[in-house]
Image (cartoon, rainbow, N blue to C red):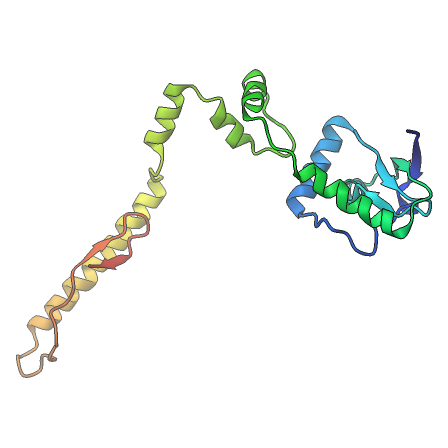
Length: 199
């Protein structure tokens, strides 16, 4: 396989591409190129149309790269080019992760988990010791002092409104009091936002 350097402005994506590239994926492509360089060629035809590697092309272009390593496939019919594009995307998707090997790699890299394509927080959770995991679970759902203060203020606001309504109701004679079909409902205050939850 002969890999050649081609200016990016000589390459172009196909009119239709079977793979859509999200902003997140393009960001991870850029991180990968920054970390390791271009590790695989972009596959093109004789006219510079990209048959495989559109996401890599977009990422490199957005990084200001001027050229890329390319592998040129020649002599394909239009049907064969479409088949190549479909196969390239589909065959990759048929693989599955070997979770045991993944876990072993992550354990070995536990001091440096900045890996393109992975959420570092998730990898950190994978290498947590049992004691750290227990502590993290104990802290799950705890609220910050600012949140607690906001909840308390909301609770006080509702309490003041209820007291004012009770005082106002005391000054109303039975004839003035509106008829209610049913007694007012009970409620609790949400510990997160302080809003009333009717029971």
